[in-house]
Each structure stands twice: as structure tokens, then as C-alpha cells.
Length: 131
Image (tube, rainbow, N blue to C red; front, side):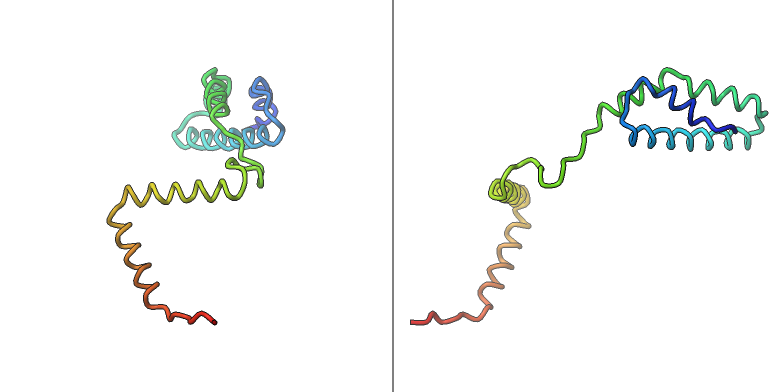
């Protein structure tokens, strides 16, 4: 099979992707087409038939519409240090609210957890306060 990377780039050019994402998609589609070629040749198709089938698959309008839908769903990852939630105190508050919800939803776990922590707290040697 000839190298289809330039042709793939031309097909996905309408998506206007950044260079890194475009390279990922070109590589993924190239690998997919190579796999399909091997599959079709193993099934006994002639090389000319395989080439025509790959061309049809590459230029299928559903390919671009599927890629558009996939790309639209992708959410960019937050930059480290810029996560939602603001300050450290706000994030701790969110964690505590989440912990309370989990404990309310799982009362068996909550009672077990509280009894274990109570036991561990009672077993600790107590220190005398200096006067």
C-alpha cells in the first residue's frame, strides 16, 4: 500500500486542527487503513480492489462527520494549577462535601469507618498536659 498520509491530511484539512492533534489523527487513520488492507488481502481480494475500497473508505463523508463529532466532544485538559475550584480551602470544602455524600449513601461503611476510627482513637496513649 502506498503512503496515504498526504491524502489523509488533505481529507481532514477541513477540520482545522492544531498540528499535534492532526498528526495524531493522521497516524491513527494510516494505521487503520494499513490494518484494513491486510485484512482485505487476507480475505483474498485483489490489490486493485483493496486500493479502491480504501479510497472509498478514506473519502467517505461519514469519516469527516464522525471526526467532527468526536473532536467536538473532547474537552481540553486543565492546565496544572488552574483546576476548577479556586483556592485550597475551596477544594478542601468540595472534598469534605463529597465525603459526606459518600458516607450518607453508604451508611454501613460509615458506621464501620466511624467505629474503627473511634477504636483507634481510644487505644492511643494519652499525653498529660504540662501544667
